[in-house]
Image (cartoon, rainbow, N blue to C red; front, side, top):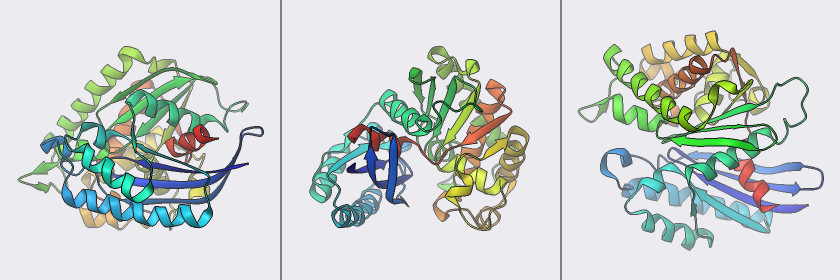
Length: 313
């Protein structure tokens, strides 16, 4: 086995996986998996720049991760940065900070690369499964973008579009510098129209409706699953490969968009960093399910982070 460390830095969160990988058996054994909400993409859609306080939050998490990587003795490290750092004018400042702390240059990957990593991470353990029909549609709903990937054993088509829970919240649910809580019907309608336009773009290159199994990734999807399962606390083992029906997703999405900050925060499995953006994320998921006619979503805790780890193995 090879001990690898993978870091995925997105718009809303930064995550670390240290694992032992065996390419011969397809086994990936977690040693440490953690996530920190840093909101790197704070204001990027409006200013085009990474905010100083967002950079500092991200660098603080990197320092914590560096200590874990050193302690566990990872042989290889790969740091992948996604939507927010692709969009920012001052991404060089971000790159220099990561090199200083972790000793590797963050790879600011394209949306297509991001999609490929997500597909590998989400489906590697599903390949050969008799109970899930193929092709799969893997949907990774991030903070700044959403990746769509259709494939069987390998990727057939992929597209990244600029709708994510943070971007949609900042674009449609903020008025006079404050999040409207709860949002108005007009705000929700505008957000839904934006999501539908992005789905039109995705369908230009990805045959979304050919999919027979929808696999959903990332925090918006797993949080909706935790609410649907009625968990008293976030439980990765129960969430992983759970199946949530479209009617249940609709009910949760509607409730979240009608709720106040305090009501959303009261869900015991809700991460504090997702309270303000989960309504938008849930609406993205619902819109996708309705567009392709998916009766359910298979929720995966394995995603781009696992794909990055496999690329090192």
